[in-house]
Image (cartoon, rainbow, N blue to C red; front, side):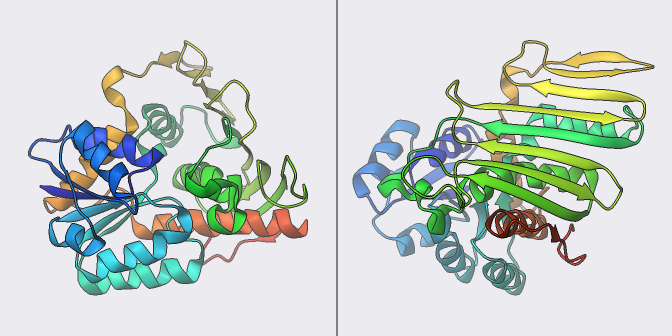
Length: 327
């Protein structure tokens, strides 16, 4: 199983150490900075190559872990070469780019897999399973928080809104994906965002607060932030007609389910690293399996993130097109 790693920056480190754990995995790495690719290859095992063409000629599938504004071009080249692609989120910067990549993957008979790693967090998976089994009755209100310190990328690309999309497209997109996966189509979204520091504060940037109304009538309150001095954290609550599910990564208790009938906790095992689960899934794709996260789901999360960005920029409530509200 020959796996390419295109881009060897911060997020690639999470990918490579877990792909290296897969039986029979051979890793090949490429980066615009050859020394960085060589260093990663020496750390996790594998080899570095000098060009994207060399990378694609040597692998069965490729993980694209480059800055967001380069996702489209890199993924297009990999798909044109007939390779399965695990593409970091958001899959592209625009819906038009996403549609082109999805059509290309279909034409080439390969899989375009969005790297929505929250699908592999045991707590998010367990919460969705409990919701679907009626543990809280009819879901009514959801609260999600994801935040940490501002990320640092090569040439400061995270802080360049045109390149990264800010906290909405880079961070909140994780939770947009989970909300769509768990609670279904979205009817409308309203978002406000602030930018801290020297730049104007009336554009999407370091903190975003979104209110989402689902077609089911449930509402969600989502916070994403790059200003948390305590470091990275994830938390959520799901309140329904018969109970409450809650999780806070900084708490010891793990996932909690309380209701009229049950009260239970679920703690994560050390072997449950979500990046390992994602690596196993993509490894299975390279061996002929279908992915558990599809390209259209990546597009749906992008559509909701772009709607949030539009709302933050204009101050308007954005009504979702039913064709892009979910998958």
